Length: 424
Image (cartoon, rainbow, N blue to C red; front, side):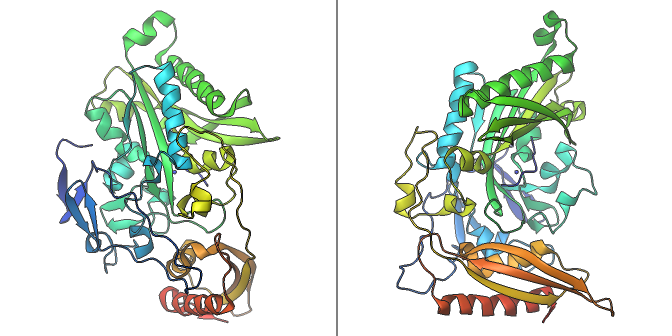
C-alpha cells in the first residue's frame, strides 16, 4: 500500500515501453557502495557506474539518465539504483525487514510470500493508475517523481507491484524495496528510501462464519495483525487508530503509538478498494493492505539521528550493527561542526524548492545536511526573493573552508544556470 511518508513481477522478464527495457524482477545488484575519499583528499561526488547488472541483463546509464525533456533522473539518483540496503542483513534496514518477517512467519506460518528484489523501474500505469492515484494528484508531477520518460518512472512506493502480484495469483505477500521521490533536504528526508508493503486477501470462506460484513472482517483482522506487529517491534506501547484517506483503500487508517513521550505514526493501511481487486482477477474477495517506511521506524528503533547515516560505509557506523540484533542503539562516533552558507535569489513562476534541492544535492551530495528558507519578500515590482540557508556537514570528517567555498560557488553557478533565477 502506498504511503506518503516523511522520513514511501510479470509473466515475462521484461518488455519494451517507448524503446526502454523495463525490468520487473531484478536479481541482486552488487552490494558494494561508494566510500568517501580519504580525509586528506578533497571530496568529490561519487561517479555513477555507466552500466548496472540486473541478473545478467545490463541497464546502461543512458537508459535511465537521458538528455530528454521528459527525463529528470540525475546521476546521483542513478548511483543509488542497485544498492538495496534492505537486503543487507547487517544493516539497520535489513535487520528491521527481517524482524518484520519474523513476526509474520511466527504468527502466519508459510502464509506470506516475500519479495525484496523487484525492479524499481516501473510504468506510470503501475505506479499510479493501478493503485487509483487520481490523474491530477500532485505525486504525478515532475516536481515530485523521477521520470525516465513520459511513461516510465522510478517507483514512488512499493504499491507499484501490487496489481501485478494479485494478477499472478498471490493472495498474501510482503514487498520491500527502495523507492524514489524528489524531496526537501533535512535530517529525515532523502530522495531514496525504503518501504514495505503488505497485502492479505480474504474469500467468503474466511468471513462468512464470523457474522461480519466482509469489509468489517478485513478491517478487524488488519488492526489485530498490525497491533501485533507494533508490539513485536516496540514492546507494550499504547496505540491509537486515526481515520485517514488514501485513494486505494476504504476505510483507511493510520496506526500511531505512544513512544518516548509522544505519539508517533507507524504506518498507513486500510481495506483495499474493490476496483483494484476486481480489475486484477480477485472477484468476490476483500483484502487489507499496509505500507510503512523502514527509515522512519529504524531511526527510532536504533536511535539514528540523520537519514544520511543509512548510506554511510564508515566502519565506525557499520560495525555497530549485526544480523538479528534489533534495536541496538547507535553510538555517535563524531560530531563535526556545520558550516552555513546563505543564498538569496529572485525566483520565477517555475521555481520549486524540490528543484533547488535537486541541484544542491547533485553538487554537494551527502555533504549537505539541510536547506531551509529563512527569509522571503515581494517588492513593489512584484518580484519575489527567497533566501535559503544551506548547512554543510560531513558525518565522518571535518570539512575545509576551501571545500565549502568551492561547493557553494558551484551551487550558486548551477542554481542560476539550471533554474533560470537571478542571484542577489
